Image (cartoon, one colour):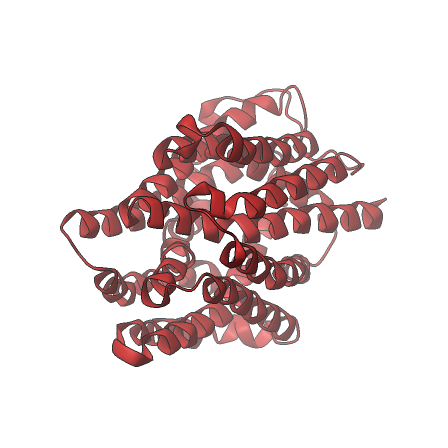
Length: 381
């Protein structure tokens, strides 16, 4: 049962990853070209807000259902929101409103995914599971952005018309992923009672994870959101933007494969990896004819090093949760800190946009934001 559930989980999650790889980059490019970089920040901030709210709501939903059902519903509902953007428009075509709507099923999905993966892997080596799943999802991501970039570059029309085929394929794959998830026999966690106070964690042993969660995504969210837009700003090439997503996925695959054989070294040399991430971020300062190459090199190095750091930190967190009877409150609390860190990053970039900063000025902020990776030290030492 455990093995077949794991296979179904891998298939479902990575269909989701493929769909997200096709949609995630190019919805940002759509909003950037149609509106402005500030609209992208508004969209991203809106997603984080309602996603966090739905994490809390999902805690109550677990009283009546289970993690597998939330996983499935969240996946399928995401597809409906995308279909709304393509065919209905209206509020679905307003960046902030779309973000609010899209964040609702996203929160349900991630709440279900977190506790479902916790249950499925309870007797497994978590580091290897996270590395394997990340490698498989990166294989999906290897093809998805380049495929989407080709579709968008060959499409005609302006606005949503250029992205229609890409978005429809993404939505259809999400439906398939949700249906496959329904066949998983492991239900995941179900709670008989839940209240908002269950997400307010006072456990002193958990404090180190709070610091890590607040800081851990501040750099990666900037790179995944801003860098593809920066590449498009420099080149106006949809296919190159898609290739960047493929390149990033290839780096993650290589990092995950190598890290499974270097787990002990990674855990003992994390300070050197953190210092290398910070040093690499200064490559984003390169301007002129070498700017695009510098962006690819910097992003590749940072992604390669951050992947095993993230897997090691999350493995530590999931092992910590094995001693907790009900883990959903901790997963929701984790989201509070993750979202707070992301919103701080978006706030920094939004203020820069309002003050008239150029896209290159955004790149200048990355070395300062990279200092947040020192938050990993608390959970890895």
